[in-house]
Every structure is written in structure tokens, then in C-alpha cells.
Image (cartoon, rainbow, N blue to C red):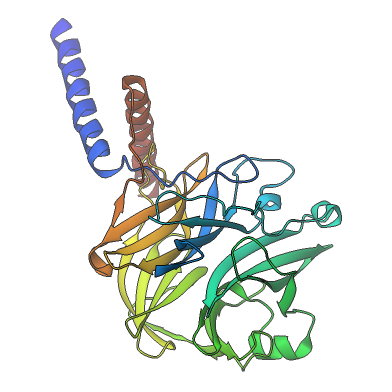
Amino acid sequence: MMEIILIIVCVCIVDFLMQTLLFLKKYSFSPLHIETFDGSNQPYHPSIIYRKSGWNGFKYWMVLTPYPMEKLPYKDRWECPCIYCSNDGLSWNVPDGFCNPLDDLVDEEISSKDFFSDPHLILRDTILECWYRISHNYNDERDTYVLRKCSDNGYVWSEREILFNPKDRDSVKKLGDMVRSPAIIYAGMYRMWYVDNKKNKGNRNLCYTSSVDGKKWENRIICNLSGKQINPWHIDVSLIDGLYYLLIYDLYDLTLWTSDNGIDFVFKQILLRPSLKYGNFYSDGLYRSVLVKTEKDYRCYFSAFDDKKTYIGLMKGKSITQMKVVSCSKQNYNFMQLCVIYLKNRKRDISKLKSKLLKR
């Protein structure tokens, strides 16, 4: 009997050591540490611009929204656009003279459970523009507007202006009744990609439109997505060295697509999937992400969450197709933490095995 117990103990120790070494090698990455105005320090939904020569003293500018998993009165209440700047893309700070958030809800909007979402940064010549959405709830209906604020220094911003009004018939006729996750490039004119389908039932389309002033839009074009069947949820589009790169989050995978014309996109690869490993910050899911090219490397800043918090992580590589998740700071674990990680991951493995057996 003692021999059997000894064998079981030895097997458990060996399994613990092997699984722990595997976890430390493949999943022990740390996300960016960014302090948010609501105190949760749970950043989400990044949009980043990079200029080698800098803009107002910084090479990187980012807008994000906090998205605390469990915070009253409702987590969407804190989803306000917030501005940060950096010179290395790792250490992010609020611009001097500025106080986040860029925009906030008033009491009436909070009582209606309205919320902001989907911010995006554009550098138009010397003007930094932040585009974002606000959703107003009326009984069981919701109207979502696209807004904009502008700045020439990063800390003094203009008032809200409406770029898409869902109550304007002409705008709805041209763009549809929903502009979700807008991704905008400015090159003499505004070029915008977005996901449609207000009711979120069935298939969603990736749409493209253009505008001279950001207010009067051309009729939308439905983009072609070939090489993989996908139902887009949140996106980003970047123009790098004459080629359009599209990131799609489809409620599970983060995928990469390319196009010569910005209309016909071809699937290239899956960039990232949830790790499904307890103790890893992207264990439970991903979200909207952004692609950046610097003079040294390619970077993908990605939204992620585990069972408790939201984060922004980083992938880096010498080429877009070779990007890997990297740690943004040193990650230390004590013995008890490693034991908890091991036990919870083994519990997850057993649950998966049970589910597979029940399906047979």
C-alpha cells in the first residue's frame, strides 16, 4: 500500500514540475501596466499611432477605455476614452496638463446606462483626432453615435462633434444603422472600415466608406474576405508599406488579413487565440487589437481578459507573421501561486475531458 502511495506522490510531483515548467515557458507573460482614471487599472480596446520623429514630444500616442470586469454601477459606465503617450511603447503616461477621461458621461446618461466604446486615434497632419462612440439607451432600443474630439497638443481638446447620427436618414442609408469598431486612416481624405449589423443577428459585414470631412460619407462597400469563413466583431486596419493589414477579432480568434486595395482581403494567419490556461492574462479571451510598425519591429497591442480582469498585451516580431507574445515587465511567482495555477489548470483539464466524454 505504501509503495502505491509513494508512486502516486512521485507521479504528482513529476507532473507538477513538468506542467509548471511548461507554464513558465509558454504562458507566464505579463501585460502592460497602465493606471486608469477609475482606479481599476484594467485597460482595454487600444488604438495607437506611432511616429519615429514623434508628435508633441512622444513617439507613441494611445487611446484606450477602462473595462473593469466587476465594478458598480455597471462596467460599461467606465468605458470612457482615455489618452496616453510613450516613447518606448511599454511605459505609458497621461500627457502633462491633461486629466483622463477625454470624455465622460453625465448623470442622466449614467441613469440610462449609456456608454462610450470603440475609440480610434488618427493623426491628420499636425492634428490628433480621437473618434469614439456613445450609445444611448431608450427603453429596449439603443442608438449609437460616432463622435470626434481634436487636439493640436494632446492635452487641450475640442468639444464633442457628431460624425455619424443613427437618426439621420441619409447617413443610415449610406452607412447602415450601425458603425461598430470603426478603423480610420487619413490620407488626404478619411477612409473608414467598420462592422455593421445593429441587431447582431446572423452574419456581420466588414464595410468600407470614405469622406472628405468625416461627416458626409460615400455609400458603403461590403468588403470581400476570402480564405477563411469568419464573422467579424471588432477590427483594425493599418496601411503599412503600401499594403492594407486587417486584424479581425471574431469573438474567439485574432486573425490577420491583407489587401492591395482595402476592399478585397485575403486571410493570412491566426495571430493569437485564448491560452485557456489559468494564471495567464489572456486565458479567457481577446478583443480589439492594433498593429504598429516601428523602425525596429512590428507590434500588435491586443486586448485580453482572464476570469477577473482586462488587460492590454503585446506581441513583437521582426516581421508581422513572426510576432510572438512578450512580457512587458518582470513576472515573479512564489511557490504557493504556482501550486494554485497547477491545481486550477488540472481542474480545467478534467472539466474538458468530462465534456468530451459526455458528447460521445
